[in-house]
Image 1 (cartoon, rainbow, N blue to C red):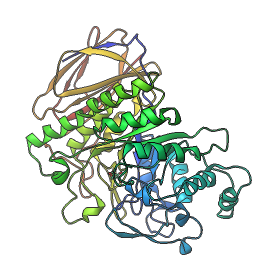
Image 2 (image 1 turned 90 degrees about the vertical axis):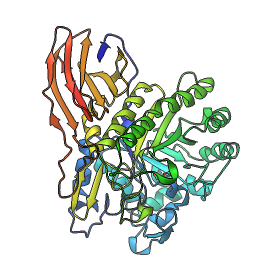
Image 3 (image 1 turned 60 degrees about the vertical axis):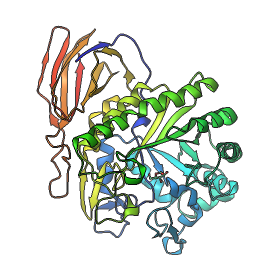
Image 4 (image 1 turned 30 degrees about the vertical axis):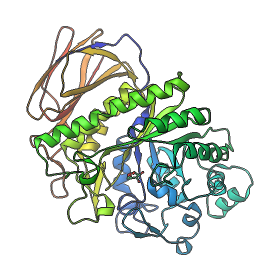
Length: 480
Ligand code: AHR
């Protein structure tokens, strides 16, 4: 396959927020995964797991979305502040019917964000919450002066307001967030967002609840009735190879299911193209971003685990889904302003899995690591010969060109010939690959899929030629 890199032309910036994450009160994502409490024997800082925080910082986590998901539209933030012993408990009806202690609340979330050195994306409750409740939450978080909510925050130990860059007005309001019609939600969005006040000089980026998969009508109605009042419109799309009802196993699948999974991941391109075309009619400048704040694989929960906890293993196939999808987001960088893979730890397509004090990084984590250079880089235009099983990105930052290539064929090695208008030297080349379709890391074998140095390349007269194995993701960095 020949890839001609037109590196003299400038393209859009790939927002680092495309590399965002999502953490819901679901299964063992927050509790055990991220937060163990100060008294835990697992090493922690103010209750947050040191190993997990360090691993996420190592992939430059830019933003974390919280508290849901479906949980967001049942969450009453006032239950999650003040002394832990007096916090109200609730039933997490969506996710296993377990008791939610509310020990992880607003203060804990902002402590986590502080440790991760990332931005906060808080998702408000429209489905079962009031306008006043949402408005007061924003006041509690961001008001610097004297006010009832700001004073309450101080009483609870936080003097200064926090930075909250992103705020979501409801989640999946076509489903778990209230089963609304788009016309009804559009009106509610207009009303609720009015009271998401900006108290300081920092703008809050407001995100309206967007469509499920290919519900283009939802996008049409939201844009028509409220586009000038939003900064972003969300989109949710999950890959389940055998469909929503059966989903399919994370570990036991055949070659056909491998390809179905990759094709379903590639479907993201059509979804973004079509939603964006509708948005173009109201917002040709692409001011309003598509915020893909839930994406990734969703398989049948691992046998023997609580089905409501959505715990699944993560294989080299998940790595293909991550790479294919990130390449699509890059291609649409002008419109896709943020994306948040679901979910950070122990839930769905997780970066990290934990078992007590043990922690492993998944193949998906390693893709985020291999793709780090693309954060806030300029997308570089290319043209290439046809290839149905290769997906790639070329970007430019700090006088370096980064090329990432995902070869999702199960059998074919690919000869990639990169032709660059301006050529430097290969500074770094790394990859992940596997020989088995379901290769994965586990607690007793944590490095089965891990980043390795890639040496199967040659510098040529006008670029680089590389031989990439099947089931691999490779990143080559070229610079002066
Ligand atoms: O990520 C799991 C769930 O998927 C979220 O809570 C919900 O928004 C979506 O349906």
